[in-house]
Picture (tube, one colour):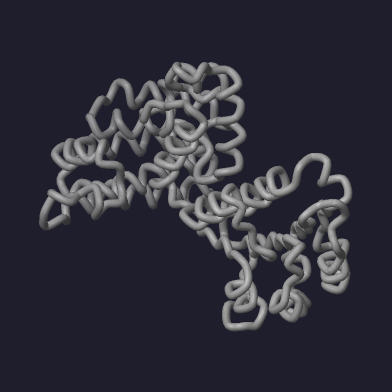
Length: 332
């Protein structure tokens, strides 16, 4: 994310490179920088004759070079954006000679998703020397909440921790989908109004009371009644609450509880466990309620439930019954 900020700030300040390589595991950042360049490098009047969007499946490397070597018309520079450039993976290295000596009046943007360009070869080295590179990894789910907070803050909005977690639980680390939902919310909510779980529930359709985050809390607090209420809701709404996701999240949760037990010092629990400091107290309580031996047994039961949910050793057992069986073991 730091590289994204640096390149965007450089462009804002007029420090524009002749070639950019946008790559990495997270397509959101590739699209973000590409869209920013598309919208901001040229004026609206200049774009008509000086901005071209090409697609890797429709062009050759020679086509890209031919476009890039053109001179701008009545503008300081032209912008050539190559989307889905990974479709040219077999021939993309042929761009190396151009990128070694790029046209100074052209801004060539190469969007290379889902695959990696060999850093040892000439193309990557040429772009690193003469242009800019954005190469971002996918965020881990425990990083997404902080990203949501910062994204909203940059737009002048705030969000509660629970509301942020609801988005992460529902959308995972799909930053593109999260960004789209945030755009919807900012059309509804006033900047001075904090985005709350109630707003998420009303406008995105995620239940604020019956979700995996609340189930995790109920289990951690040993609130048996609430936990069974939540899984009964899950059983009645299986499409919105797939068992495989619930099991995966609970497995991750109890793995962290086990890790908390194993910490020699609890002073750096947040850093050691990779969690927000706000939630350390929740794991502290869960560790108190579930001794290490019990946590190990719960993890074994979660693995068993996962296998049964896939039809191994439990034919014709409903997801609701598997959840009830799981909670019975957890609370035993």
